Image 1 (tube, rainbow, N blue to C red):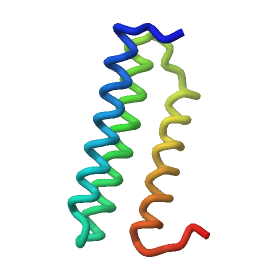
Image 2: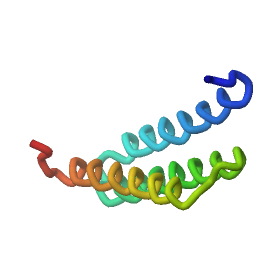
Image 3: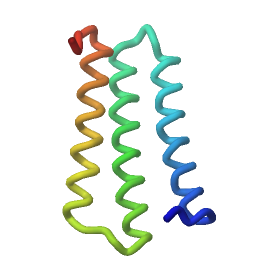
Image 4: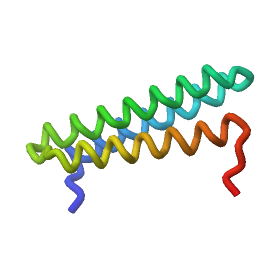
Length: 89
């Protein structure tokens, strides 16, 4: 179940990481290389957030680290492909 006091701040920080990453990517619009760099940084901070979150909750295992790494890389690759002018369809 959702523990209001502790989990709220975890997910608020995750939202801020992703929101600020998205805003910074939007503001760097003409420069595609900078957008991809900011996208990679957002993915990296998402990965770090996940590792720190599970470390603080004492449930960090190798499977969780691999899962966060793969999800971050998948998101970065898909978004970078779209930013560079590729077509998803």
